[in-house]
Image 1 (spheres, rainbow, N blue to C red):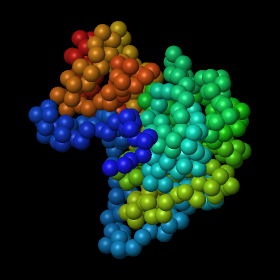
Image 2 (image 1 turned 30 degrees about the horizontal axis):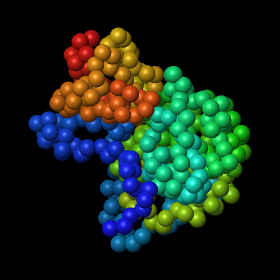
Image 3 (image 1 turned 30 degrees about the vertical axis):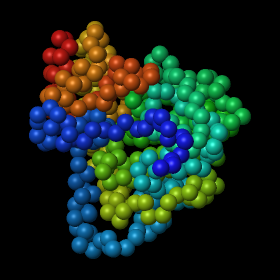
Image 4 (image 1 turned 90 degrees about the horizontal axis):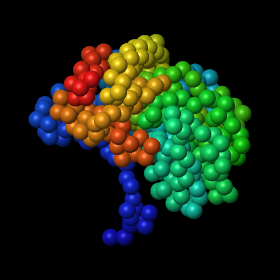
Amino acid sequence: MKTRKVLEDFDAYGWETPTREIATEVGLEPEQIVRLDTNTSPYRPDAAMRTLARLLPKVGVNDYPDTSYHGLAEGISRYTGKGLDRLVVTNGADEGLDITTKVFVDQGDEVIIPTPTYSMYRIGAQLMGAKVKAVPRGPDFELQADKVLEAVGPRTSLIFLCNPNNPTGNYSPIEEVERIVRESGVGVLLDEAYFEMCGKTAIDLTDKYENLIVCRTMSKAFSMAGVRVGYLVAKARTVEVLNKVRPPNSLSVLSVILGEAGFSHLDEMRRHVRATVRERGRLFVELRKMKGRLTAFPSETNFILIRPEGARADDVQKRLMKKGLVLRNLSKVRGAENCLRCTVGSAETNARLVTELKEILGA
């Protein structure tokens, strides 16, 4: 069987192990497993679910959705303050990343990625035949704009930025982002998947710069990871090009309904975000009390990056998993060696996590 050469020895995305497999491995029931490795919300979007329940008997699942997703786009427009001609509705943020990469990247191009960060940037670029130039973040995971700009060359076609950054949780000043957009002269994809958790955004820079695309999702703050709704924001001319490669009907009619309902119940989303931010603060304080045994890095997202001191992250992860708590292991990620990433859960879940970490680390 002949396949593309790029797939030979390809470093694929590290899929999360299914809950049922974890449960079997550690001898627990699936309902006893708490996923703190996916950065999803512990809260359900009940208002949106009630809307879906009311409309479900009349949903035309036998037909395709409106390919413009007009009602959903109107909700996004109200939320962002940007016109319909400035938006591209996508199947989650990952489709937004894929569309942007297809628009900007040709075989043999170079793509710049400050690291550590979300691995799908690298994967998307390499699948298009690009060479990835990784620019390490600073000692506190700060974005180093000077080094990013120094890496720009004649073959550079796209720069990926994540703000706040995953998996480090820190936020880069908008001025640094704007400088990269302005001085690089190439496409810049700014991933704002977690922006609601920090309340800061560079979205208004899309009014000014044609080479900036802001990518967002409903998976985090809106509690809709399973719904798969995202969107891109850019200048109208850029949106015209993005739409050339946007696939038709990639969202289901159910996703469209839930997405529309989510933007109609912003009060619920904002209540959940406030609860998450409060819990993030409490969890961070408790984790910092284990100083000497564990380092917790400041976060403006719905997760916290931690590094066990005097213990292997692999061992800590395995021991937590036996208790039903699943954290993301980043030990093999350059720049995040021996680190784990834990999603901010409910107050009860966070208290359990702290208790188990104290026992494991002897803190």
